[in-house]
Length: 125
Image 1: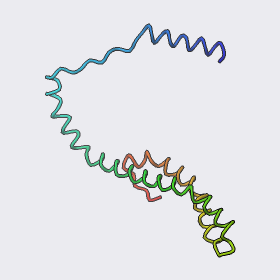
Image 2: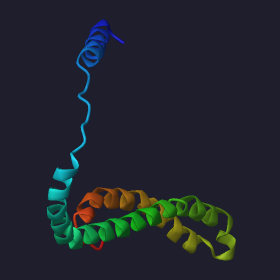
Image 3: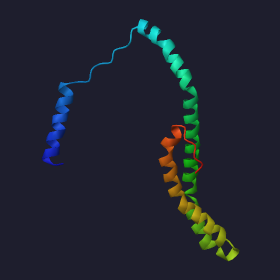
Image 4: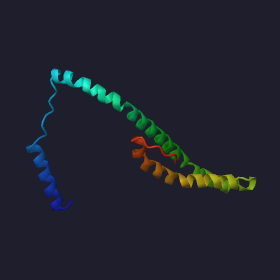
């Protein structure tokens, strides 16, 4: 760590200890009782979008899990190509190896699409 970085870290630590975060204060019960009906109306209006987003996110997470599982196809395919080629296993081993080689790219695409799917997007990739 350089001396400049150390000085900045010390200044930040001093600022945090001298000016602490303000403590949170709770709402009084009257304010909660007044705001609760409005909050319930907003929550009921937003419910379809929330459900759609959670459903899309769940589907995308399932696809991501499948992609992680398909990582293991690559070594399995290579082993099948090397050791089972005399028994006709080269072609199926090559298929497994290709599926395993494509899996990281698919995982990357599904990971990048995850926020879009959480907001209700619907892509079949």
